[in-house]
Image (cartoon, rainbow, N blue to C red; front, side, top):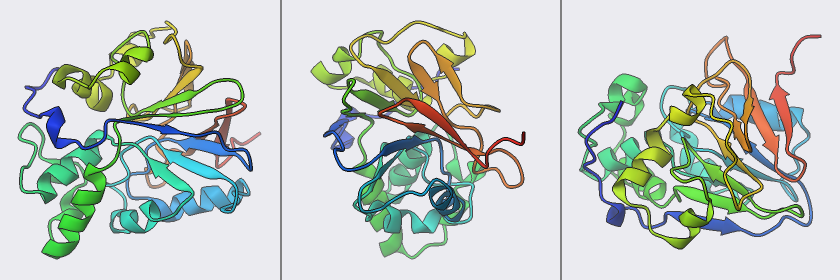
Length: 243
């Protein structure tokens, strides 16, 4: 499914961000949060997350659907929490800045929490989400790991570093599902691994050097959160699977 591309790269202040290596603790990437921050806190407690040394990287879709979306600014204020932009974050900030995304009514997809907020709070959330990068990479001792919500538009990660995102490529980064649906096992060159959210699946899946982590931790009574430890590329599941 391809939607008409009515968004300009110029309205996104940051499209690529690089994070230096963490020499003091662990780094984790986590799949879609979708406003379930209290449940995410239980995950962090369960894995012994140390806020003084560890870092958590959200793969986008911080908001909508869950009960705690309004807490997003609190989480983004934490020095150990970092995020990239997902399609739900994109739709919220477009709405909050007075230019709703015309192709999808996010209010029908868990975005109704945003409608009744005071205007100043709506704008504050929108401006913060607009600042999120679309793509990021995190350095590790064995090479950088890429963070990208949906799918990589190129077979070579270097293209994301070298050029601004055009509209088609932005669409792929925020919305596309074709690689996982085709079971594409190709390797994205010039990056150690790439972590993705967006595609809700029963268990974390690895295709080539791509790790898909949205296992429905935001779904009440179903699903679980999946995390990827970036230095070891170990997959963690919370709650752990029954033995």
